[in-house]
Length: 419
Image (cartoon, rainbow, N blue to C red; front, side, top):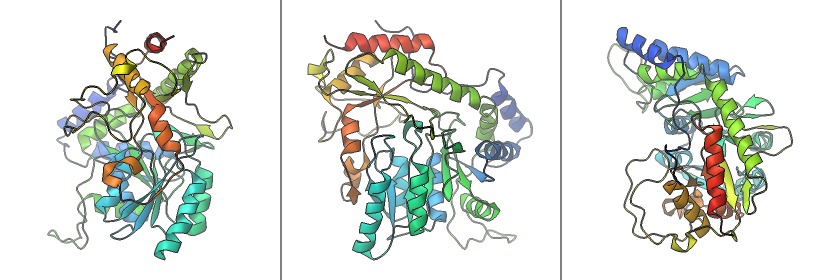
């Protein structure tokens, strides 16, 4: 039976006090509707207080822009190589190619599903042996908010003197050993897309270490204009600054970020409790070793390959005609209903069944080393991320997801299981 409402993965949620509208109104009342102004300055200060560690923050138009500028500031350019987690969204990898560099795709370790530090070091040694130079940067990713093994990653990065650009776009507020993700490396990336922990409608930010780096990023984000009474450009810059309107939303969102974090963790706990004894379903949880504090941006499960789901025999029999998951509203029409690397039939069957029940669910990210656009990119794989892609699924966790919703989702999953 379908729910009377659509249950989304993570829907933008405004503060009950309506502070987002207050800041937006101030921007209109004072005519600060451009990519600068009091809201941008205030939002950056709020973020700096939130991440701590004495860091500076530049508010940008997207998380992808933050990855781009972080890599640029780390010195990445044409002909360079960048180590990047393969199990991720394309915004982690595409900016590498924007800069004319080559992504070196690194597989995951099974505990966190994030970049495997041992495989990462193996790749560093091999790239030095093959090319005569070390990779220019390392990009770990906080997949679905799960912290990566930051201590080990930084140990290896420091050993080889390679800057780290942390992609914490999905990990806003997640911590490792009590330290906020995005503050371990040289640069840290945040995202405030419409489906993230907090939103600015669209937007992101880059965390930097000091005033000098902050100022340089600010220059790159505003077309890199020199100090003359006319426009003179001695470096290529970008139009990446966040608007004062969007930053107003962000300022209001920062007042409820702790509530959002608490809610996502509670939803995760509910899934763990309610699915604990459901045979063939495993809820992915953070390692119980004390270092990890995930925001659980999305909650994820894996399906045993032998699990049977109603309608499984019809999986991939029809073409998908619209975007499934994410914010994408425009997609390229596929040539076939199947690819050479896709989720198992039971995962697709459950997704379709849940969609009919008005529940948004989607497969986990397809690893970049299995994406056609990166078929020629060097990859160091163990099989972990490809195996997870075949069995993994994301479940709703956002602020609008109630306890009643979670129980309905779990009941839908139970009813979908054959036998």
